Image 1 (tube, rainbow, N blue to C red):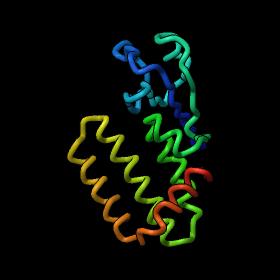
Image 2 (cartoon, rainbow, N blue to C red):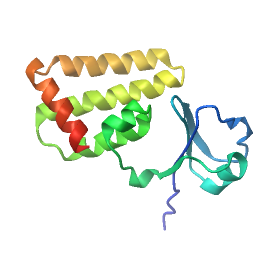
Image 3 (cartoon, one colour):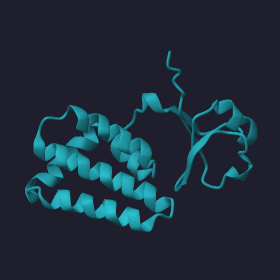
Length: 149
């Protein structure tokens, strides 16, 4: 029997001190507009040390609007929202566009972690995909995916 480890994102204000998070299984800590603490552990362990977060997100239940998540610098969640759309989309042009947006999110995650070289590589891959699409469809795709995500 396989035991599934739950993964959570705890969203805190940007200035929270994460240096006191010992003995917690941390996947990553991302800072931008918010501090996003990505754990594979009991959220209560973090709450005991830092207090109540602004939000707790179970990563198996990611919801939200891509545009809102992206503008809030919650790039990991934005990436997950798009990936679900990408998996079920059969239109080749739309899939390329979604893949480009996913790569932009991944690039921003790497950038925030100080991994500039990887971030640049991912961004170049995204721009390469976008350059393959007809210019006139890009605004349509943007509006459509922002409204339907």
